[in-house]
Length: 480
Image 1 (cartoon, rainbow, N blue to C red):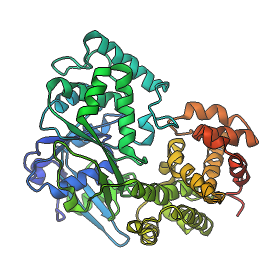
Image 2: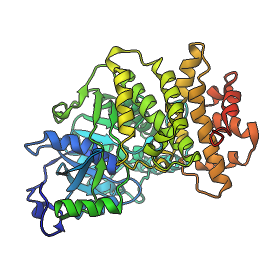
Image 3: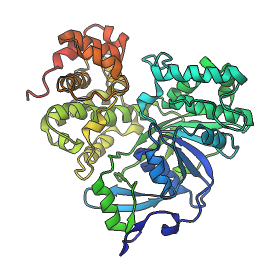
Image 4: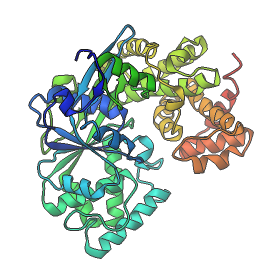
């Protein structure tokens, strides 16, 4: 793509993209990461335009409205340390409001639809500390009641034409369940569900969310899911910060197209997948994706070394005055804490194919890219669900090896201090479990520490010495 002399709107006509590919993939969670990752991989390998994506938003329809005005096209900006490169991505054939259950049911009832992918964030699975669907969560309970009412009325979650009944479910699991029910009734065949969120065993997490809700409201549908739906585990990796007004202006200046929805990302990309695709899939491996028979150790490497370090920098870095990952990494104290955490995690990442030393070196280069403004406040959101996967397992592994796990415990201590200071300053606590967190922040001292560690995992909090170790680390983040 070359720069133009005059700016024009970006759409299929102005760009000369031709007709969109037929929809064969449904995506939940139309955001920047999906467009920098799964949509990019699909674009790179779909030269014959056979694998179009229909992307559904989460809470707000705005992303779909903006992208639909551009016929699904958007610019991907790969931001290296020395320069930007620009590429228009054509793989999204349609974008919809996530509440459009009728369209979702219609698309999933088509035999040609082969895959559902998800980037809905860790918290949106609404899983408890046991990894199962939390049916007591307010949104889950409301959706379960709604879908139970529909099911009891006619043993179906949507009408025969695919038109949703009165009301609409709000959670990703409930929305997906309505679409799977439409597919069951249409006898459209098996399908793969592919979670692309930062969860250990994310395919199992997706299955537990969807299957758990089905068991509660539609036992017949639960049995059909067992026989017809494959849940694929993945490890995903590409740092994708929020797009700014400056980025939008920069795309227009560089390309000549007025793109209201560009995505900025790093040159690095990684995707590891494990599972079956009974209705087929794109040849993502041609763009560098890796298909494996065992994925758990790749998941741990990503969750602990990249995501865990991000969370540590998000809380400790902000407490010490940094705003971005690159700034926090330049703080020698934060950098040392991160290295100590990596050393602990690496003790339990021993498989040769993980190449942990190379991975750590690459992360240092990626984190230090000062042109990627990865905001720590963005990473800090939903810490309760993130730390269950990024800190707690490392501490447990260290203790099982006879070591305390103090570097990983520092991550939890930084999170608690961050919450406490934000609450004292009257700032919003942005977490899916805010309603549970806020009363605990009214406590003081060790009681506050114990309550928040227990919120992460009651069994973990009950282990001898855990709360005392975390509490001893609190208050140290601004002292050095």
